[in-house]
Image (cartoon, rainbow, N blue to C red; front, side, top):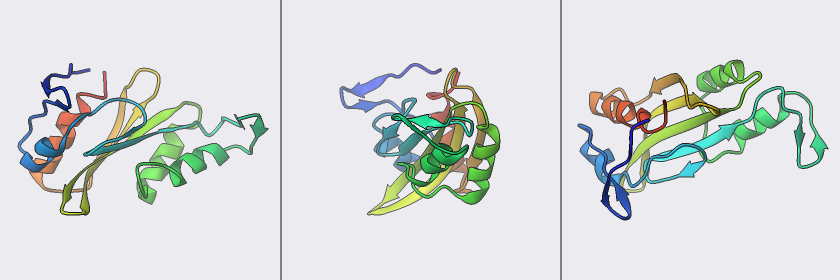
Length: 144
């Protein structure tokens, strides 16, 4: 995992060809996060049944994490991969984006394991090469 360097106490250094993403990026870290350029959420395994003393059917908690999450609307093709990959293990799903005025522009999605932050898959939804470079740069801060 790449070590964070800081431009000031409130902004980590991030350098990529995507100047807007760089400027808006204040922090990229593992786990649940609501940040300027990243939303991320733990996704429980399909096989996890118990939560807060209640027992649920298989897949219920995983579906809940995919529907009621901080990353926004997860595209179905990504949710399908998350469900398949997360049958018996916890995952973390990241959405990387930037803003133009008040409009969120999705750049990509990244899926990692929860236990060792292994990269499982990355999707580039903004096909611009600068956006791809920004997502590739961000992956270095969340994976081993």
